[in-house]
Length: 161
Ligand code: NI
Image (cartoon, rainbow, N blue to C red; front, top):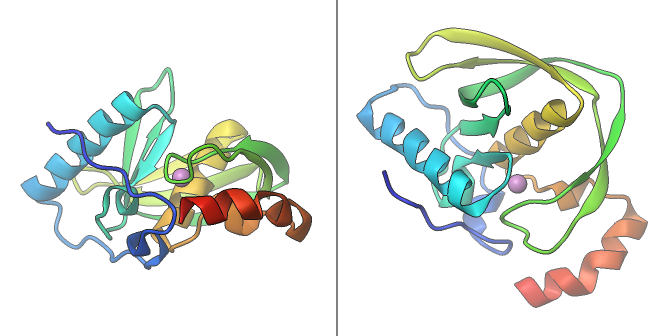
C-alpha cells in the first residue's frame, strides 16, 4: 500500500467528470487500498479518487462500526429530506461551512468484487456519500454554499490557488 498525494483546490482534476470503471482489476484494488491508507493518514471520513489525481468513479467512506466501504460507479437512486451539516474537505483545507443536502440517500454501486450493492444511509453518512459522489462530477462542497457564505470564504480560496 502507498500513501497518495492529495490534490488541493485549484487542481484541474478536481473539476473533471470522472470516468466509470468498467473493469475491476488489480489496479483498481490497489487504488482502493491506497485510498484507504491515505484517508487513514490524512484523516477524514471519505475520499474520492479525483482527490488523489485519479479521474475514475470510485469513493471510500468510513462508516465507523461497519468499517470502510468501497463504492465503484456510485449513483444516488433515492434521496429524501433535508439536512444542514458542517462540511470540510481534505482538498479544501481550512475551510468548514454548513451545506444543505438530502438527509437520507440510497446509493447503488459495485463493490470490489463487482457485485451490485445498495447502500442506504442517513444523517452524517448520507452527507458523506453526497459529498464524495459530488467529487466524481467535479463538484466541491464550496460550490453548494449560499452566495453569502461563498463571499465569506472568497479570500481564503484566493490564497489557496
Ligand atoms: Ni471532499
